[in-house]
Length: 173
Image (tube, rainbow, N blue to C red; front, side, top):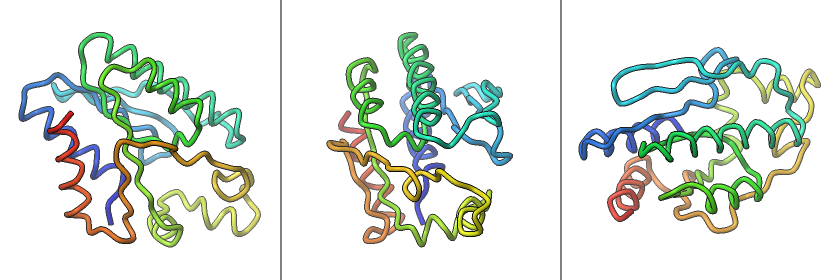
């Protein structure tokens, strides 16, 4: 199954091949509490502690805008920035298109069954048991991208096809 980390790896490989400086922003590391930025020089730094962030729409939107502005800060310095985030807000998509040079939006359309199977933090189980509320796409609405540059339906496409399609759009960018 293709996920955000796989797709970031493909984009990083492209940046390495053409010598572009890049940063990858992992919006949620394994601990579920911090965000890391990894540079093309092998430097990995924790930049945000998100353990205090709420799951309500406004808290998620505020955090998504922090990521968007961080991407802009790095992109304005000539860096290639890859971010895997669940920022399903039309206002974030519009802001990114207006402010990020070379912005490419890739939407991974992943079935709920697959999301449940690869739920390392147990969020789906917690929501099922009533221990978590305001889960995006379950208790609160999400804004699916209206015009992504690429949509990858992971229920219909193999991981290999998804990765090939991502490489095609990156090489055409």
